[in-house]
Image (cartoon, rainbow over all chains, first blue to last red; front, side, top):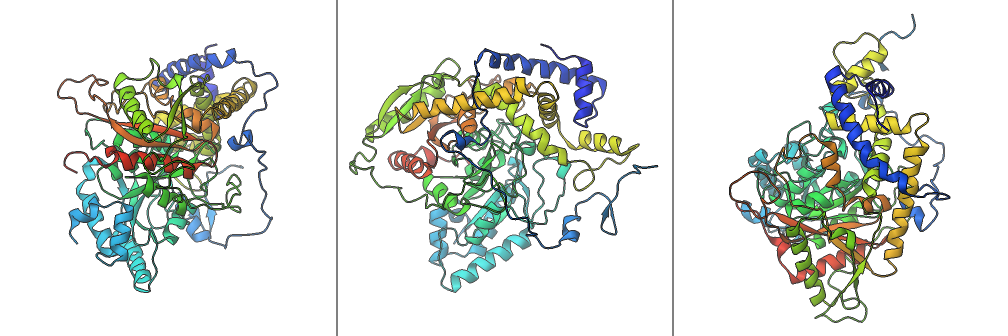
Length: 99
Length: 509
């Protein structure tokens, strides 16, 4: 399997990245180089093997907790928006989305 | 007390000097800040805030004056710039977060502050902790004090440099695929990555959530144990993957002979497993020689060496480099140029704003991993890549459990070579990924792992340049079973009682 330039364009769009042509070419070469070493995964028989998400689950079942659905943090809007690129009256500004 | 004396002290000595009021937290912080600023050419620190540091130091001195004592009270430390901090900018080594001011502190930062530690500043790292050389930082390379033409390793490169060059007695790091153990190995530093879930990930800027784990780096296993005791513990409401196990005192076994052993042979009965895959052609001869010398010290201490196999070691590279980028692509989708972080100056519409902001804000390695992750999670490919990788991940974790029926601890090199020259591996992702082979298996399995100084390699041999080869540090990797950090630190401490590799300092520091 080999990726093509049009795959790179499709993936970049999904990832919301913009790759100029020269960079897309280099990305293609590098990703294909990487997927060459991924090929060896195919040789492993994983029939019936449960995927492992939380590593210690290999010895002990791990249940991801849910905390009670109550507000735990105080209103801290000013501090939370301090590093926002564009804010007005407590709202995040984005370019016009709906005409 | 004079400056040289302060920077030469490790955590335990400095805490004792402060407790005995031979020096103060303020004096120690001032001395180390001055020293760190003098050595900015090493690229270890990304940010200082002298007012905040001194305010913390004065608060520690007030606690001491009130009669309080503690193993970290008044001790200056520095944090990898992956932990968010209110008092210092938090950048993750990325242009995306240039100047970012967090509204809160990471749990690890809060816990160390509660223990009375004083923050000196924030430490350089590969962008979003993606890399093994610190060359992926948007703020410049960090330099290995053993040879400033060489990398310090990464991603906790600035952390390793700060400890090795005596710019802080101890620091925090994070380890996703080896980012504590490998730079510790390259810089003659002791570091431990605890079991996944021991330290809260709250406020650790996320890279790969099922792998990321915080840990300390210091000059000795004993100092690491002191820091880990303060850093770790359940954080039930703020990190859903935090282990619900009581906090531990990780120093409790230090210097204590194993059950049935004697003071002369404190590790009698300890079986050290040597995976044959770690000692093959893929490892440089000078590294193997140093590791073997350290292992023979362990035999003198009463341990026995057992040959074992971790048959899927090589597979850990593709498995890790599928899982970690997949999780990264998801975690890094939050950087959209809207809520925080970099926003492009020019854009046509919202989608264009996202694309331009992200392409300008992320460096090349981060973009590569986002691309890999996006692809392997995309429709039609999930089963073949991400799911398959997680299945093999279980097999790798099971291999370790099989190995631990034959041994108590696993040992081998932390990295296949000593530190390479800055620029040597260039921008070839595969060459960089292959260098992680010995740290990835324990990361995938979520096991605790350490790197412990084990002498020096030939140096230069791995590099291309001529000139005088400087001997470069080699790290012995020790891997324990889940939750065995205290025993792992005991094992490392026993070596450090018998040898002085960990005390070696680069010339001029």
